Length: 279
Image 1 (cartoon, rainbow, N blue to C red):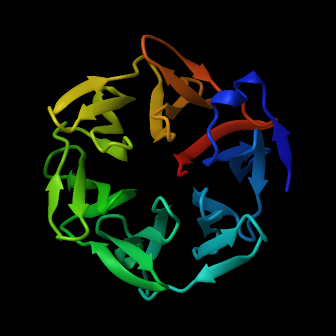
Image 2 (cartoon, rainbow, N blue to C red; image 1 turned 30 degrees about the vertical axis):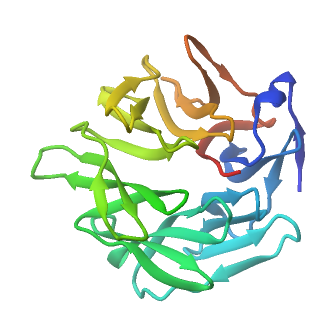
């Protein structure tokens, strides 16, 4: 493993922050550990990683199209068996304890129709199965799964994608956002009162906030940039990825009423994606 020291901004970088970083034309998994950005090993070129701080496990889709689960503690890396033949898989996501792993299953390998699966006690089952395609599962304790659902494509002349949630106990699912645009990558505050997501509702992709009690929207970021992958630490601080017009990517910490702070990336990293925080 390789470690990279951080500058003074390390005091605001939470444990459990993970992302994919492009370093010398290779995408690598990085996680913040005790003030150090550490590269996590992968036996197959990784995509869509999910790191869980409590369990010290991380899951990723390898270049071999298999779902891998690895341990930061002993570097063990194994391929998890999946039942669906001819399917492809993407976007693994742990719950807050690392005991449940959610996964998007692309039926027949295409993104037009998907299910969200969950692995619990070594067994896979369907967590979400509804019309069209569901992506980007985010588990909110005690038993709610948020995700994005593609409502319309060709019939609307554009893609409409909204945030939904499902109570995994009752099985009741409901639409949360109504943007008539693309709303994706949901994360929810610890108290369950505020939803954050990335949307192109105002043209560019920016970070938005929705009060779940009052149904009040607030656009948090702006400008000729692409803001995506919102993530929250245990203190409620908001982080996200920003891509500038020249394509450069960085990790930002949002500051209410001020310009976001850009965090220092490991040496050699020129682009980032798949930012997550799961503490």
